Image 1: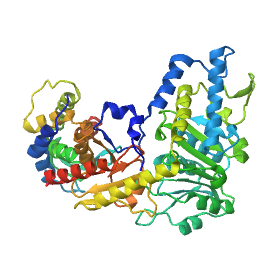
Image 2 (image 1 turned 120 degrees about the vertical axis):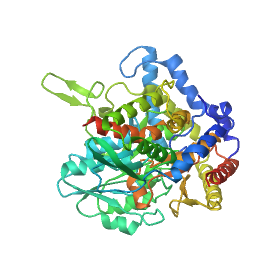
Image 3 (image 1 turned 90 degrees about the vertical axis):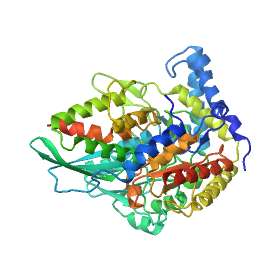
Image 4 (image 1 turned 135 degrees about the vertical axis):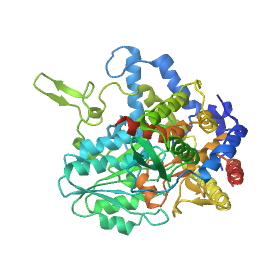
Length: 400
Length: 144
């Protein structure tokens, strides 16, 4: 188990009694990242790519070094495979709009899975509607697992794209994306991975996994809000066209026409979130302080312990029982709405999420309208699970 | 204003749980003269309000659906308040209640049930649960 990890995070110094079990929504921010953002805002602030003065040159250099760092984080030696976006949702929408829209025709199909977040669901659904293409949603079994045989059957000659998450933000299902990518590539289908829930803890080396597109957000990997990444494999870079016009993405502008820079610069119109990039860069430094296997082991221990504790409470039912579960558990309490559960846990300083978690079709398939979700990160401890259990037991007693 | 755990528990025990456990006219009435949804897509709470209107007055009203204890209690209380009153009076009641619910200070007097709902606005982000059926009904009535 990791030890004393709370000390990296100022929020736990301010609120030592806080039991933060909502890291799937956003991870807490370490001092290292906060300091990096403050450093830039206080002493290094300048716009990039536009000035010839020292501050601007320095900001530009650090911005591009961050791009290089993100590329290396994914095992890519080419920083130009990395575009900075506002987050996972933005990255997915860019691929839907810039890459797939020109390639998707009537009667083609685009495939996602029932485990996907609305951010990796609606962009493809809307595009399929627009193009009169088929929107295929691969089902899951009653435990919340994807059946790879079913998924493989969903991929055919008319499939133009497959997009799926690595980890379900609702059920915690961890999918074997390497095998799925290989299946899709056998049929020449490009694959996008929504790595929002896995990017902080899992090794997503491009050479191991061979994804075509990858999206993630800074704020779910100890970084700031408002910054995200879109990775595009070299072979597809020329197929990503601007989706948002403005300054900073052009080669040449005349009254008659405009020509554009190549990816990634052609999708970074306007002034980017420079301080966010500095924070993201620092978040990667923070993650490098840890062994990822130890991070996963730490979270896995907490999830297994929490699962055992929840099962032991009469009236608590865990939603889904995936073979490989990450740091996320959804559950319901018989007779008490998830919103009420979350509100009462909050009274005991326990922060959890309640609702649909932007996965309405998934919850419908699991025969529930809303759940309570707990999610763990490196700063959580077993004693917090005990507090969760005690509060739930007390709530159930109060409610009856 | 911070509400203590004990205060919240007292409010729940005295008013919300009884209303939640025995809601007023909690029954699907698909043949009602008017039906509308009170739906919060953020949390999934969804109630169908089934309203029978005669001569611009709510004759019998029912509701059905899924939601938290507060939204269910709020819907139950709302329906009890509007049964037997005119649409015009229902609009006035909804507007007055929502005004007192959303403004910092309560300026109007209500009965114990509505005062309880208003008191719960200080309970960590649950104001949307209270507002849900009132806003849905008001929007419906304002459309004519």
